[in-house]
Amino acid sequence: MLPRSTGRAALLILAIAVSLTAAGCAREKPKPRLAYEERPVELLYSTGAFRLDQRRWTEAVAYFQEVERQHPYSEWSRRAILMTGFAHYQANMYADAIKDSERFIQLYPGNASVVYAYYLKSICYFEQIVDVGRDQAATEQALASLNEVITRFPRSEYAADARLKIDMVNDQLAGKEMAIGRYYLRQGQTIAAIGRFRTVVDRYQTTTHTPEALYRLVESYLTVGLLQEATSNGAVLGHNFPGDPWYTDAYNLLTDRGLQPAIEPKTPGAKRSYLDRLLGRGTALPPPVETAPAVAPPAEAVQPVAAPPAAEPKKKGVFGRLFRR
Image (cartoon, rainbow, N blue to C red; front, top):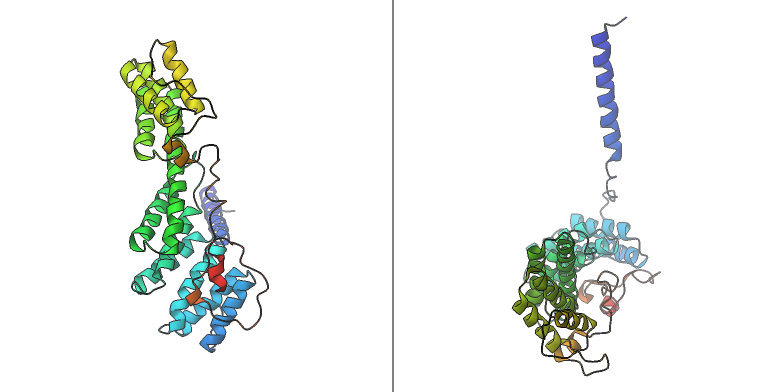
């Protein structure tokens, strides 16, 4: 019979071994990789494209990676990097797609298809945008990446779509500021709330959150006794959004205190201001992730495949035609 201390030590070693085994089992399975067999590059590439048509994203990645492995300095290898990134994107493997895009940018910065790599990277961040109640790191990254597409390639089709998406990203960031500002108001931290609402008015003034932000400023300034600031923000709200319900509420709030923002609220059918029309009042902004136009491989990267496609890629949209051009 073993001493008690020895038995405890043995049990401890056994528990550690079991935990290590469980941790090893919990690791992700390695990505499938083709057994090395030298094959013509055209065959490897066209097979990968065919798997892409069949929406078998993981298999497509394996074939495109095999193109790079067997023919690393060929024209096919350069094309395969973008195709790998597209397949990863289709499989919602955004981190891998971003790495593929960055690798292409690093290896071929002067290539005509590099605009697609920048755009693909921005879309991967864009599709990871979450609701305003959560961390907006991906939103900030999406904004930076979309601006990079516009700055580097201002006349491209990708830049035109990036500009539309930036409006949606700004609306998301403004929504986050509003959510934090409302929280501060509920907690009685009025000065902190004013800072958030001012950020929306100053930085995101062309978003759909501007009318409420101005109303909240009126409300907050009245709370801390800054009557002139409350009246001024009410006047700005009335000038830009005379028919908006938020201005009606602000007007009533000010007049109840004996203050006058100088502009009577207009009826909902009244002529809208320029900023009001610019914001498209009355039209709800769709969630950014659900309405994102699809990414498709650049036409230059697509080659004829050995068999007709079985299905269209799962993500289709304004750039879907580029995939088949």
